[in-house]
Amino acid sequence: MILEEKPTKYGIDREIWTGKIMAAVIKQRWKVDLKTSRISEILADLNISHQKAHRD
Image 1: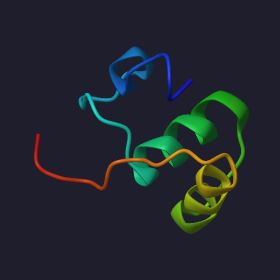
Image 2 (image 1 turned 180 degrees about the horizontal axis):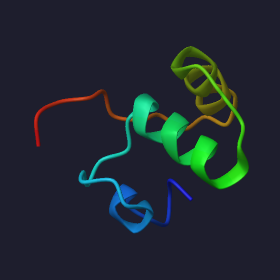
Image 3 (image 1 turned 60 degrees about the vertical axis):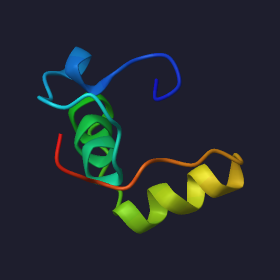
């Protein structure tokens, strides 16, 4: 999802994935609550980094 798509596909008004946006989309799609710290851990385990939030 984060490698192939943008948050706009999920109704988010941003082009860049952040931990907060990933958590919101995961909750929307799969009804699973994840903290942003857990998302960072998962990404690190997968050797994937995500960009920190900034003003678009």
